[in-house]
Length: 247
Image (cartoon, rainbow, N blue to C red; front, side):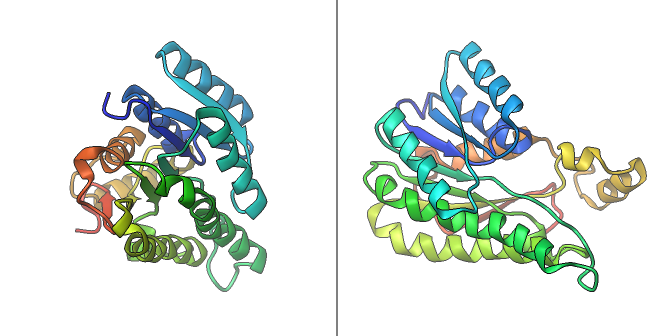
């Protein structure tokens, strides 16, 4: 229980990768505030699953792309658990299109959530995390932010921005013992990939050196390591959990 008595916020925590991260942190002893935007039913189910594990978690709806709502989420965590030690920025959206067909609204929607949302949450969380004896921030990017991906100029730009933001923030807070790192998932088995055709999935899988699609739990375990005491000498790092795509 290496995260016992520590409090975490996981944005986009109700489904997919976020859900796996919440469960992994709870299993390691953390108290967790689960943020969701529209997945209320899934959030309620997750809170029930946490209770079965004997853990402590509460769900709160908030749109992290809105500055004031991000603050509401941080305030709730502090009021509920008395402090904040860990922030995991996982909330994200996609609105894929070729650049010539992409609308301004599609670009803004993705950048506002996937990049500005990360900045909003870091901005409001930083003071309480600096007061923690083991402050940790993990921002979830993507291999699309490293390699680029056709049809994702908005998403790739936002996820690359998350990496740059994280490196800059890591330098700002390193002297206080707070670490800031990035996990960049590759092709992961989530609802997003489930909507793809079997042919498209097979094409992606063939590009993965390990020849398998990743599971949400693969990402969750990487996040749990980076927020643990075992990773206290790692900061400003981007860990690609991708089966070797960016190797």
